[in-house]
Image: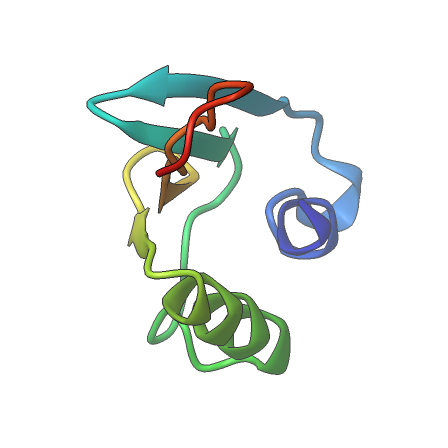
Length: 89
């Protein structure tokens, strides 16, 4: 979200940042999307993106960034199995 607010809307350009969280195919999915100017360089080379990518990897997740009419980043984290009370797993 920080990158969207810092880079997507230069010179006071209006825009929208959307944050969604859902469960899909056994994963928790966080999507941050903006309708800004898109990526101008190689995605994923900044310090913030590197830290998030490392954290996602540590949690056995995946991260994907697309630049089409703005930028969309999706983080997918596997859901842990829920323990049932009174049962050993």
